[in-house]
Image (cartoon, rainbow, N blue to C red; front, side, top):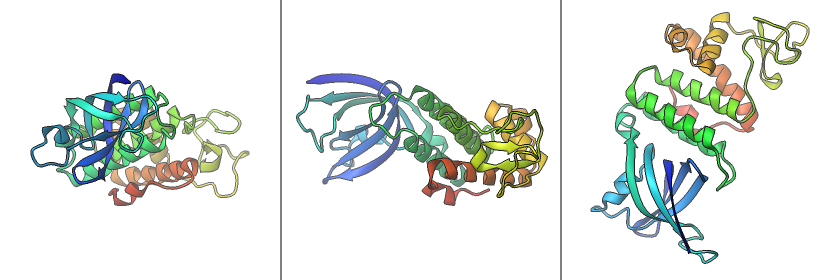
Length: 248
């Protein structure tokens, strides 16, 4: 029998029985965790309102050794709100769809339940905070989050030096399968030739240069988003369901 606490972001919820839910969270110390929250679908449950997607919460879990609870999952026994990011996200379509894609990405990059993923957790908290405040275009916040999530997972794209031979750039060609921009000698079939402005934008998003990113023209933002989506698809081996609803 064990009781433990952790900070986490609610990624999604699923109905369980008549009044319960299974809550999937990305936590600071325990990575991705699924737990049962009992009675949260009742109309008078204040507990349930705290366990909605986008919520940053302090949660207490209860587990009973090898004995099954719910469907072999721990119980959420207490929760306190740290930040209700959903308040600044769900009422705006562009923020909501970008935020949903961020939650799905965080879950996809944490395949093993219970395995610590502190960097991904911190990225998600920071991304949702920025998104909820409306400081930048939602599509820019999303692309910055996706690029940094890829980097944390070991798939950081190159937007300056050649991804194959390391020759300093800038270079004209971009090859998803080769890890980013490539020089003329390393160019492979299927490489594309994006605009220098789009590559500069993506480099700025990866490094956190928001002054450059915010000054980008809409056509370059859309072009950059297309490159990020293709790069993410390649490394995840399938796309994100939620990306289809994100407006460029």
